Image (tube, rainbow, N blue to C red; front, side, top):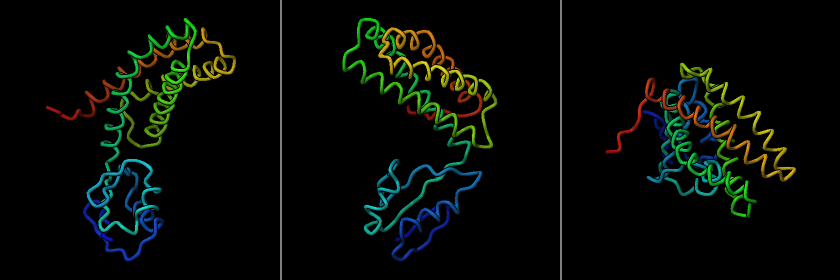
Length: 199
């Protein structure tokens, strides 16, 4: 199997999943993040180890895609911005459903919303661990701290099946925080990053 990382390539005979991961770890450092890989022309963005365990013996060329920290942060912020733009219009009907007694669909949407908030928190934690945070990073940390506090309130409301408290927390606490985070993200992208031209 040929393994390519950046401009380097290796010819590996019967490599193990650990061999591949070790090579990736050797090539990533403070300046690069692992993004995804391309196995014989097929892009793989998730469950990398599982994919390798299932298909490593069949792969003839594996290209590892690394991104600079700046590219990585920009791309993750673009994803977060898109998520917030999609999530915000969904929240008012969700709140209304909780005020008017939630059904199974309401709870499913709520769980998806919680997963989205968790992903935003993880994103902030990952960027916080890099050496190249955006200039307005203090604002992100402020929002993340507030998000965490309100997630505790939501957890309590969830345990007590308190639909009114869930609706209040989403409407009066989380929606404004999402709007604030969205503005900070867009500000970072516009001042320090870039948007991909899709025209």
